[in-house]
Image (cartoon, rainbow, N blue to C red; front, side, top):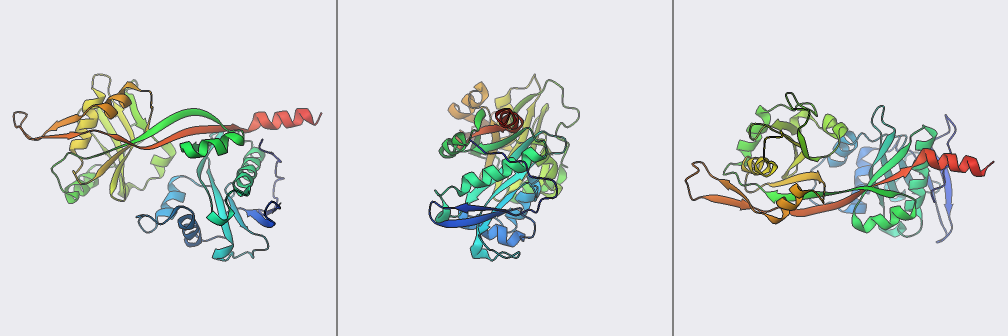
Length: 330
């Protein structure tokens, strides 16, 4: 059960908690006053450096609309205002779109030395309290399968399951050619005109994330008539943040056309597909065939997608829990 204690308006951003299981204590603060470079190093300590491009964490904070006051930072007890790197223990990043009663997580992480001692639970508790004090109705996290049990023990419940699929492009074009094409196609609104109202959404992330993706990194492609793909460059990969298909268009043909606009050396990621959709099943179990140039030519490229990521949307209803607490208090 997540304990919700509404924070009084204007309360200082530091809430001190004691962790006694291992004789360790820590403090929970907002992200204010901590530099992006320090947070980036903390994230890389937790998750590894990988092949992420410089500035990746700053871009993540901006694109996911992370709120510095709603988010929670764990530091060693007694840490000064300017926290030394070795006193940073973990974080829970939270964002909320304007006018949206549902807040979203942009990542929870704890350094290896502090895992298993209740720090992750404390971070979630603190964020839930801050959200409840603002009148937020629910918190949503995207949990990979190995993390579902952790969130379920805190009271979150699965509201949807989604997949990210990956395949390499089939286009006989260079990366430079793709870069020019992306530069020639401006980023359009989440529902670009003249998208029909009954267009099929094959995959999607969040409208707010797309709105905050820098125009220099994003483009809206029309790989064939009746198809709109919001794409962004993510390191070596091309991420499809939303794919819309007109009713008269075969969704598999739309994906094949998008693959044909992607170099063979580049991974194409379709984010947020429904795992029980017939389209998803077809993408996973059928080769998509693209014919180069003249349809009579024997040169063909076949691509089959595979699952790059499985995750569940898990929600914690906050208002209902506060109502329950009030009821018990009489």
